[in-house]
Length: 379
Image (cartoon, rainbow, N blue to C red; front, side, top):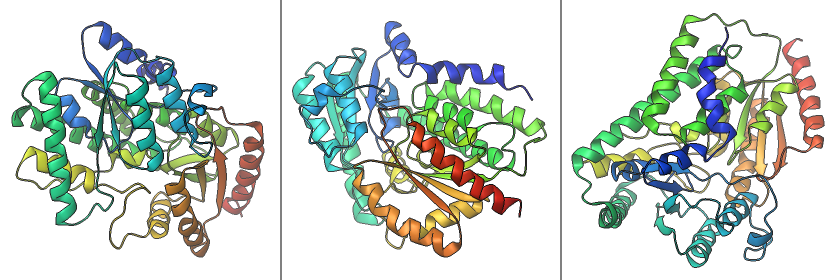
């Protein structure tokens, strides 16, 4: 099946991360950037903004290196350097989520050095289950709502409910697409899937939803002609902004069948939808989703959760993309690696930088891992 025409809109956005936002701003739409998938995007949407995720860029980070400690991750250095260079003049505001100390530091530096862009911080409770975190986060959302209303006018319950519906429908469609890809991986490459989910953060969500539904319809109507002898891999980690990492795995002969990445499936996981008000629904949507390594839920073991996801997607192995100096992900990696070993699932760990293309040495390591998996699949 030829997916070229269906993929063109996603490829266009993914080839120029901020081109869509520049065009929207030129057409008069206000644009709000957000740093983390825990930012309440529906609130920005209901306020009339085009919410886009700031994903940084490739290249040197000399200006940011003068302000951030050497042990700050490459994602933090990349986004701060871009801000200092004035690369996003179309942003009306930027919203951070307090996920780690490094990003809190970036928020403070952003506010101090780019005064033309207002900085808002969404303080998400570290523990995401229970009544106390829910009450706290609802109050935090009300505070942010008041801040936005001072800029844009009233955000009615009807407007917020409408935005919630768009985002909930989009999450449902993305989960349907993930399930289809896992069942028919030969129809849509992992690299193309990444173009789809990255572009979701850079486009109007309703427009993206319509395009995703077209892809789903095409996949439902097609028969998978993929090579069953190729090893199926599941990708785990935190941030991954570069399609090249997925392309590298597929060039080595792997089939990427699933992921647990904050730019990927974790961002589209549905949360608890029960609520009596739109603000409560919004709070439950974010606190009820699969927590990223910076957050915690009582009784949830990251190792067991990863094994369950890998087995669900029938993965032959797991490849970790570990951004250097990302402490939350590094802490989770130890129990995850132990749990995979206990379950008999092979794993490969790759240390990556978000502002660089994948180095050649990674290709060699992935190719060797793929060969090992291939022998197991065809044994």
